[in-house]
Image (cartoon, rainbow, N blue to C red):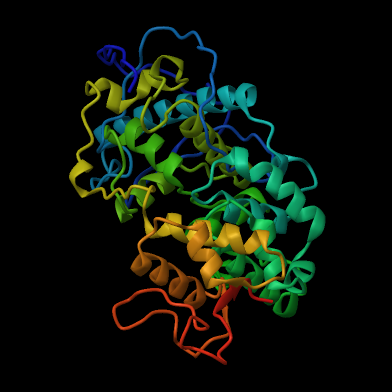
Length: 412
């Protein structure tokens, strides 16, 4: 991790009313301060992206007041009294300043990603979101272009053979996403006339579409107001407003309330706010090496003001090494099946290709791929992939005369 700068003590809240050029911040007794701010129109078509990149430092004046963890989205209401109204106004001014600074930074540093191009369809945005889940944007961008050139809409993808879809997914990882995307395409083509629904609730009824993806489509495809919470956004808001190094392992209700509290009311502006937070998390406020000196909102960062405390959730995080894992073995098998085209790969050839892999692990990987619909087993006795001890076996070995050898292939 890079050496972090020494925190600067927060100064009194500056009078920044009106700097965002928009409406005054309204208060809600239930959640605290609601963002309003600059009425800057514009729909952002797609937002995903990750990977390190440099960002020019933006000069600033004197440091401003950090927003404490309880000031935004906390349990205490800020309205109801003269003191509460003053506090709400001060927090609102700071939020307006943060919004103005972040959106100005994003205008300069926005990356040129294909799904952000004008004319990108809602389906194209959905495909980019599904592909970008746990996959670096550098690998997604070329595959996204190829995918939409081949299958520009849900109807085309729904009609494609499963094997072709899995081969086109190639090395994006987690290939079950490709199957779910094809299932989603079939539902959209048949039940929705080929057009994605426009509400989060309706989008969540589609195969493979959860809370995040539904919100992302509403925001980035339709310009609607939605709380978009990916890992980057959670980390930025957690540091900026919560003073925590990293967010909890799983999304909490408190995080969702906090994000909703600072989300601008105007739909077009809220979409731009969401994508700007994502970009900041991907380029500057990264998990392992945050470039705090280059952050446009560092003057208000609660994590910086607190002296960069360590990750309080570190003991709850689980990490699994890739090398030697079942996922790695499954990936190697899938690569072998993709290279084979429509041919069946005999188990003996798979064993030779993956020499050194424990038979039990290989058998487990093959059984899992079949169960997940990513591969089909061909030949041999039904269920004869392994013996009683878990050893991978191929029917057709000596003593199995008349039984065709076991093989595997991509689903048709």
